[in-house]
Picture 1 (cartoon, one colour):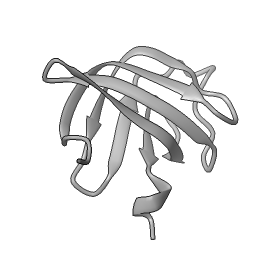
Picture 2 (cartoon, rainbow, N blue to C red):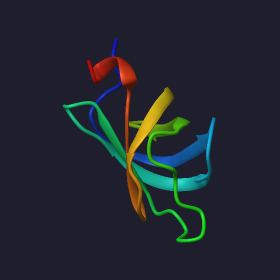
Picture 3 (cartoon, rainbow, N blue to C red):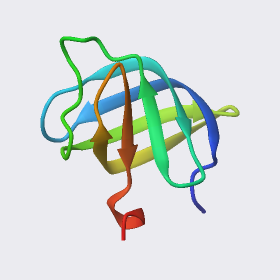
Amino acid sequence: MPNPEGYYTQVTVTPIQGQGMLSDGTGTYSSFGVFSAGTFDSRDLPTVDQYYNISGWHDGQRYLFPGVRCVHSGPTSDFKDPARER
């Protein structure tokens, strides 16, 4: 079953490659498979085209988004599952 759409809290973003660490952030998962997370410190933004593991809480349950690719970097950054890009 895919992860549910909507608002996530206690979001953690951990780089597999590159930089851009986030802990206790917020995020939103959209119907088109993009997870938007923030707020990243301006000195530690994610790297576009690098891979990350994300976890967060939605409706009292923790969900994982492993191996997602950064597609936009900024205070709020966007990540997409490579499997959904095909």
